[in-house]
Image (cartoon, rainbow, N blue to C red; front, side, top):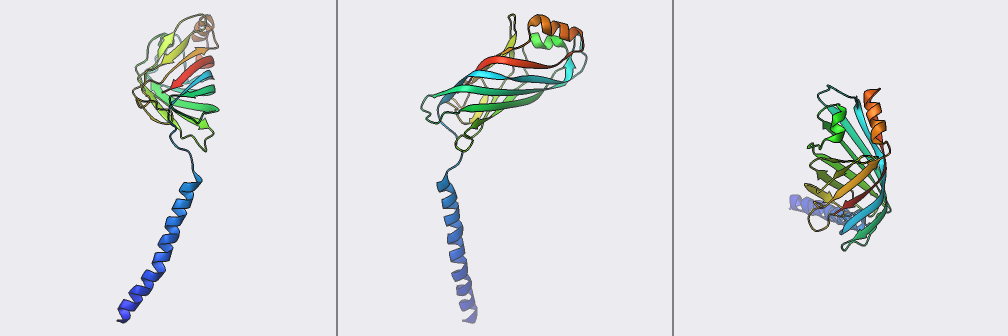
Length: 201
C-alpha cells in the first residue's frame, strides 16, 4: 500500500508538469512563425555577384573551382493563391565547377546548383531551396546566365509542381569585351550582376 501511495503521489506531480509542457507548446504554436507560403513569386530587380575561388583565365588548367553566387531579389509580386508577399529575398549558392578556363563562361554547365533564399519578412515566410541542373550562358553586349526549369524545390512559393517551374535570368555588368580582356590578364575573380528577373514557382 505504501508503494502504491508513493506511485500515486509521483503521478500527481508529473501530470501537472506534463500539462504545463503541453500548454507551453500550444502557446508557442499560437504565436505563429515562418511557414511555407503558397503560390508563386516573381522578382523583377535582381542584382548580386558571382565569385570564383580560383580566378578564371584563358587556358586555365585547374581541375575544379569553387563558384559562389550571392543575389538580392527585390520588386517581388506574389500570385497563384499566395497572400504574403516577400518584400525582398537574399539567395545564395556555392558549388564546384569543372575548372577555371574562361571558356566555361560561354558553355552550358551541367553541374547542379542549389539556391537557398531567405525572404523578408522572415517572421512569416519560410526559406526556399531550389536545385537547377546547371546554367546556360546568354549572349549580347553584356552577357549573362539563365537557369530553369528546376529539378526539385522545397519551402515557400513552390507553386503547383514543387518549384520545378522556377527560373531566373541575369545580365552581367561587364561587357563581353571587358571579360575577354580580364581573362587574358589577371583573370576573372568575380562578376557583378547588374539586372535580372527570377520566378519561384
